[in-house]
Length: 285
Image: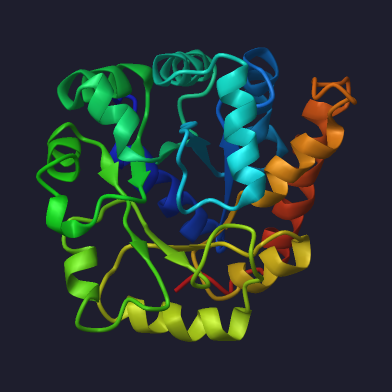
């Protein structure tokens, strides 16, 4: 019996499976601890069966500079509910007890990890079943800080490329990237615009000249139709703000979860997954 996959290998296996199936990935971003720890854990547990291929788990932070209002507020709800980095890792560990195949990517900012301690964090992340991370505030020039230690620990370090990442800059961005490349469809904060499939397709084609890694596209994908468009030109469609909006819109007047909160997120996941599937083999290359 082969050993279970983990870390970079789990991400590679998932994209390999999707490539064999001729479809792109639905990558779902949810904020850990939003709107409360119990509800967030139920959402996380339900995402794969609803159609999520990869889960980005947001690490709540008080100064999320790249996030738009919806994700910022989601982080504040989570912090108010008592979420910490340690509890985020515990949530992932609980998820891993029943799901050993779905990759989990931590997404956030370096400060909480620096406070935790890089060595201690990486050991805890591996033990919790984390497969990779996206740190929006650590450029390639600071790879010694977290990227290289993460790679040494067996985790993927997923880098962001943007419309302003030109051909001169791209090799540096890709140098230590693993797992997949996250292409940001427009310049600005999350939730501030819409992804255009034609423009994104041109950008993805340019990035593919520099890397064999899968390319997932995020920012500006809210609807099944938008997910279908992006899935036709990329290896993955990343959706975040639409999920934090779904949580927000399901809360009661006091900001607490209702009976419909989990279903609101999972129903949206099913709709987006159907949109990605409808793209067919467009993202196979």
